[in-house]
Image (tube, rainbow, N blue to C red):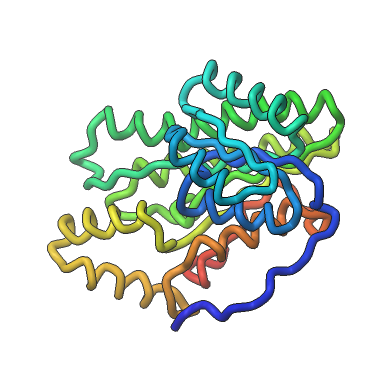
Length: 266
């Protein structure tokens, strides 16, 4: 079963807003940037791969800019955010999407793998959220959407370290939302499921090796676990991010919104 094509809903209040999306050169991040741009949002494409970010910004048009960022390093995040403010003339939406994964049995995990996942997935969210939120509080407006995961709701075999890093993202999102609520700043997260991206392609190969099955069997199992009967695509996530950034979600904060096709419903 393939996704049913449908016109994207229009959120007129987003037109003219200024957004910084990390990990936006490809995959889910790129889809989020495209979806926001379609609503008239000017977008800064943040990525550790500057050349890829520049290609995405050029393809997007509409005043999009490319920014190099290593979300693991405070100095890099601060410099990138300053570049966003200068290049866009401000910022009122952060989508902290940059993320990584590796896959290994828990008893075989190395310190390096644990640190890599936490440095990007958790520290990266902390740094980008904190630096953006300081700006938002000073200006009395702003919105944050973090990319968590289905693995932030239920621990996944061979992804214990990744799951732990994404559980942390949800805990941070909930706590930060409560702190920033008095400033009128909303903080939410999306929790994608089995999304068809280059990251998933790598994971399928890893999981197939770890389980001793074919990659095709892994994909079949993903689809079998998904009540809506297909792999997720980045646009499925992007449309929910746009909703969370809009006034239609004005009374939602501290939420980890499942976008999983029904894989997990709590």
